[in-house]
Amino acid sequence: MSDNKYANFKMLVNMCTMPSAIMSVEEKPDGSIGAITMVATNQYFSMTGENVEGCPYTEKIPKDSKFELLLYNAALKGEHYCSYVDTTRIYGYWTENIIIPLSHEEGSNIGYCQFMYCLTKEMDSGRYSIIAPDIASFVIRTCLNLRKEDDFYASMQVVVNDIREFTDSFATGLLTISKEIDEFEVIAGSVRNAALNIVDIFSNIPYDVIESWEMLISETDCIIIRNEEDMRYLEAKAPSWVKTLRDNDVTSLCLVPFIHQNTIIGYLYISNFDTAQMARFKDTIQLVSVFLSSEVAHHLFIDRLKSLSNVDARTGVYNRNAMNNKVDELAVSLRYDPKPFSVAFCYLNTLKTINITKGHEAGNNLLKDAGKLLKEVFKDDYVYRSSGDEFAVISTKCTEEEFKEKISRLKERASDPNWLYLTIGYYTDASEGKLHSAMHYANEYEQEYKEEFYFNNPDMVK
Image (cartoon, rainbow, N blue to C red; front, side, top):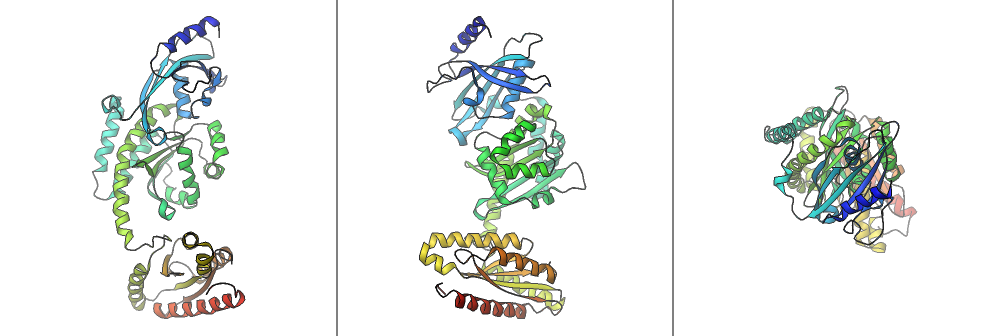
């Protein structure tokens, strides 16, 4: 870049009263985006006084695939851009971004654009509402569909189907998360291949992977993967998640959070879409997500009220009250229509010792770990906290061999006498349908194994 061009760029940014930078954008021979450099900045852009001119834009701004595409379209295709981005979780403010194309020499693989931004406490809804007619029509239709069905899940399914068609994506899903019990739920999903089910796809993804999204989303307003370079960038930060993407042949992705009271309560997940349309539909999806967030928050609130009376807050499994109701209901059903079932009682031998030696906070963490493990092993069964340090499991879907296999996995993973150790008694009723008797036998076996544990570990508090 000539000295004269730099001087002109410097004069241009210095005329701005908001943070401003001239960006140079390289186009690689294959048409992909190359280096993006801050070639001239004003005093407001570098408030801390450091000189970032000549540096990659990532020295000042978190790497963002969508932002890169906007700069590329401005610098090399002459497109301008103005929008609000919800950065309240990062800065406490909304960010208004403005990108203006500058002159681009024909035949050159380097283009320039001017980037400006300002922070504002409140979004200017008047400006934000100036959107293209097709986008406005889609957003309005989405809002109407949210009120169309009486059933929350049916409404969300209609909306997700529309979003998948609008984005021409392979799969679209809507997830809610419950941090207090380390669980997520796919409440609606749409896949281009009717033979696939997005619920089945996510059934093999652990909560820890979903939890990692919040760390990644804290750096931007949403996560965009448009090519292998973006995939490798995220792989360095969240390898477990990216492995699941590769395992499911995901090559492009848009992940938008639902935020309520500054807390992420769910996500909109869109995979394998037309990346050329990303800038257009990303803004649309973010606008739609504002309305979806409200609906999801209301659903979670109602769902939370229902679960309070049935779920044990410390462990996330069902409580004793829920167990009594289920036992009464199931006992009557099995009496008149006997079917094979299995029950188990699991005693947390280490809880009293941990409470005494490490404190009740550690004991609560132990209970949480026990509940999480039991839900993982018996994810298709009923798991209850039957007393302070005891859990019960009722399974009506497993064969006897399948239940034994689950018991073996539980024993293997809950065998640490210094932290999580469960002694387990179980019983399978193949034909009689006597639930109370089966529970009595399982509990007796558990008591025997419990006494054996304390005999072999005399230092443990009984």
